[in-house]
Image (tube, rainbow, N blue to C red; front, side, top):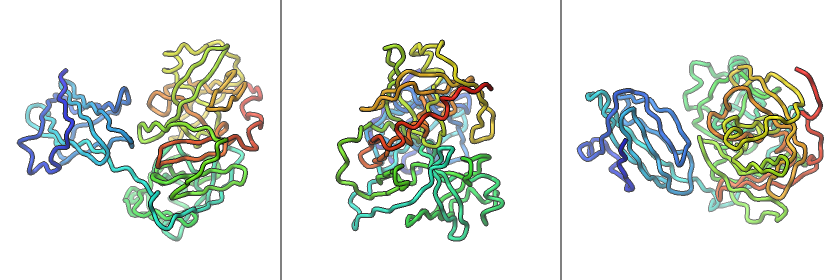
Length: 383
C-alpha cells in the first residue's frame, strides 16, 4: 500500500477544488480508519453522501489519520479546526467525496461572568450517579451520569412511557435537556434497551466538554465550573487520552511484584471495579491462575448477556494511591469498549473525589470517605 502525505488544509469546497483533490481507489465499500497508532474504526464508502465526513476524536495535538481501502490508502496530519478532503474512486466509477475533520477545542475558561453550577446527585447502591433532569421543559427523568458514553441516551421504555418523544422521532436533533441550571439545546435522543437500575437513561461526558466537572462523593454534589483556578495538592493528576469519542487515563495493575501498566477507560457508568481487556492481558502475559472469587452473568446496554469471572488482583497503583486486593472482572468475550483498554468502574472511582478538567485535559483524584469501604465483589459467591 502507498501513502499520500498531506499536512496542509485543503480547500473546503468540493465544487471548487474537485480537480485538485487527491484520489485513492477501492474495489470494496468496506474501508477503515486508524487514528494515531492503533485506534481503528470501520468505514463504509457511500457515493451518495457529499461529503461523507469523519470527525476525529478530540485531540489537543495534531494527529495522524490513516484511511485504508481494500487496495489503497491515504495518510493525513490534521490539527484542531482543520479539515482535509479527498476522493475515493469506488470500482473505477463511483466517486466518494470524503472529508476528515477535527473540530475546534471548546474552552469556557474566558467566559464572563464565571459560572459554578451545583447539581445534587444520589449515589445508588448500584454505584449509579443519579440526577434529576427535565426533557423538553416538561418530562422529568432520573438520569445517570456516565463518563464512558457520549450524548443523551434514554431507554425505550422511558421514551414510550415518561416522555412526549416518539421513538421514530427520537434521533431528530431538536431536544432540550435541563439539569440544574444547565441547559443543552438541539440534542438527539439515542434509544437503548437498558440503563442503570432506577434510571431512565444516561448522559455522557461530552455535555461538559470545555468545562471542569467536580464530583464530590462526600457531599453528593456535582459542580460544573467554567473556570477553576486552584486545585488541592492532595489530588493525583492524570493526563486524559481521548480515543473513540471517550477518554482514558494510565494506571498500573500489580501481581507478585510484576507491574502491568496500561490505559484504563474512565467509566463511572460501569458499576463494578475493573474490567480487564483480554487482548491487553495476553499481550502483557497477565497471570491466568489468580484466585476466582465468583462467576456471574452481566447484561450490557443492549441487553446481551456477558459471562464474567471475578478474580483477586493484589494491587492497583492509581497515581499516589494504592488499592490492595482489588477484585477485577475477566470477560469470556471481546471487550465491550470495542478497542484495547481496561475499564475502570465506579466501584473504584466512587472512592475518590474527582475533578474532570476538559479544558487542560486532566483527571484529578483524591481519596474520600468511601476509600476503605469493602468491595461489593469481594464476597465469594458461586454462579
